[in-house]
Length: 304
Ligand SMILES: Cc1cc2nc3c(=O)[nH]c(=O)nc-3n(C[C@H](O)[C@H](O)[C@H](O)COP(=O)(O)OP(=O)(O)OC[C@H]3O[C@@H](n4cnc5c(N)ncnc54)[C@H](O)[C@@H]3O)c2cc1C
Image (cartoon, rainbow, N blue to C red):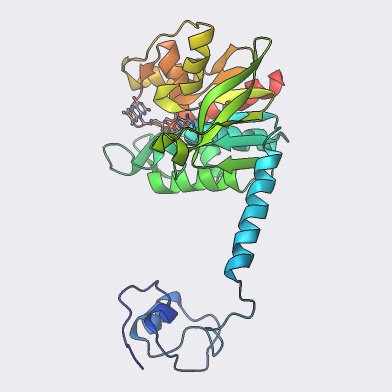
């Protein structure tokens, strides 16, 4: 035995060069016991062959599979029914709902980790508050909640990860992170595509051409910046009114009311809708965002 203690319970014993002590394993042993054994290194976690792969994967094989599957998905995304820019709460809910309705959805987000503003809760306190009205949506996404003082309390981390999981694992939704929308494609006044570039290229400012993904409708769910709406308005001016003061009671309804089609083929949801329509800021309350995503899905489905 070269080492007897793992510093972190979840780390792979192979990395610490621990030789397994073979023991007979009873089925259904408690997880706490398994972890304890792993930490002490006194018993081997999973039977005598646990440190060997029956089906090892080579580096070349891994590279080939990544390229094949990534570009297969990206090629399919060249023509989809709907492109959603921004995988925050409104974009994620909309993507899932449209997927459920049978539409092919391409969802892009410029960040490494989708989820937008959910993760940090308010001021980094990672709890999210929602109205009781949206308990059915939380149940639909399998998100556990607590009811307190006539409101619902959810872990921001659970909310973000469950929404990301629901959208990214849906067979009709293709989610591309690290992909930035930098312009829109328009045919005869109708928005029908998004110009994309790798976020790494965008951030580094390299002089590289983007490429275009086409769709029947585009949703701007880019949050405060309302990127797509502003790109459109640079060419064909829209009446844009910046968000108003903080007022959660009004703002939560504003965000749903302002979820709409703002130009042929171009829809807005979430803070993007608030930020171009003069809606009130609403603080760390997320029911409006989820309902905005649902409403956007319904409007888009009616449009295409
Ligand atoms: C400064 C600040 C103020 C806030 N104020 C409020 C508030 O008043 N009320 C409130 O409810 N919440 C506020 N929030 C929290 C949070 O933004 C929202 O509640 C909520 O997350 C908005 O959801 P959303 O769906 O509109 O999009 P967001 O959660 O904002 O997510 C937008 C997503 O779009 C992606 N994106 C942006 N541009 C591009 C692009 N060009 N290409 C691809 N992807 C893109 C981003 O990476 C992000 O993941 C604030 C957050 C910040 C940072």
